[in-house]
Structures are given as structure tokens and as C-alpha cells.
Image (cartoon, rainbow, N blue to C red; front, side):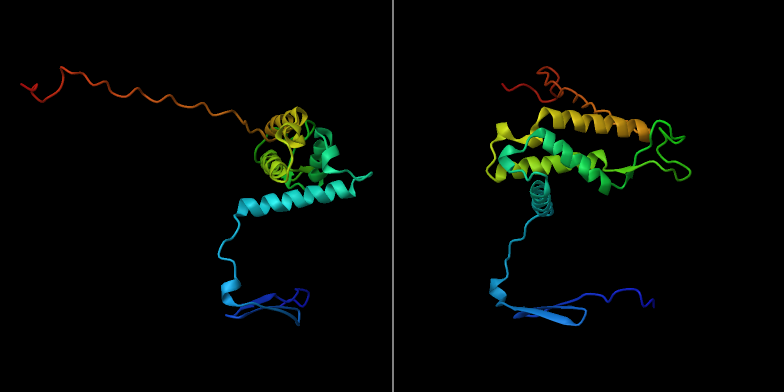
Length: 191
């Protein structure tokens, strides 16, 4: 076994004590079993809370610091561009020989970006979180026209760069229900 690998974190849950042992140190929290919360938040709610906290941290670290009430669509765009540095999706430039190929055969120096789908979902969660935290829907910076246009531009440019189309799926028209002909009934008419 490699000595460079950090020790595993062990979690132990007992009936009246929760103990977590991390690298030899023990933290223990005593609580009766009835105090454990039976309701848990959904994965979506947890992600929305983390995204909201991340955006709040971004506003606090902004120079000069911004309050949420002064935040605009331009600040949201700045935040989305900032997030690109943490992206994992290869987006080929038009000069790249693999531009337009969904599965390039070799590595290339093109930048990694946030995927359009991730940004779209992020904006949806932040838009909901803004209103849940007291923001007025008409003043929601995450619903600004500039943000919608930016997302559309990212979607289209990534689709071209990766050779994947994001065409809207057309709904299939449902066939009309079979008409009930009175004369075609196999039962004799009532007398």
C-alpha cells in the first residue's frame, strides 16, 4: 500500500452517540435517538443551498463587495465566466482540428469550460433560491435577459464546437381518439 495515501475517515453511529474519527482525533456529539431528524432535504435542495452560498461568497469577495440588492444580470454573467475556470468540458476553438467532432481521437490544448447544461441548471437553482430568500421575482438578476442570451450563446457555441445539436424536440401530436359511431355498435339498440 502506498504511504502517500491519507488515512480513511471512519464514521461510527451508535444509538446515543455519533462519533467521527479523523486521523486519530475523535469528535463526539451526544444526542438521544429521538432527536435525530426524520426528514432529510432532497439532493436538489442541498445543491441549491450550496450554490446560493457559493454565489453569496462570490458577492462578498467581489471588489468592491456587492450586496444582493445591488446585484444585476451583469454580475451574474461575471460569476458564470468566473466559474469557467473550474469547468471539465473540453470546448474546441474554431482553429482546432477537432472542432465539430463529438469524440476527438487525440488530446488538444483547447480550454475546459463549464458545460451548458450545468450552467443552465445552476441558473435555475439560483433563480429559485433568490426568490426563496426574499427577492422579488421582477428584480431577479438570474432571470435577466442578458443571462438568458448568454446561456443560449454558450449552448450554441458548445454545440458547434462539439458537433452536437441541441435542437428542441418537437412534440408528437397525439392521434385523435377513436370516434364513437352510433351505427357501428355491435349491441342492438334498446327497445
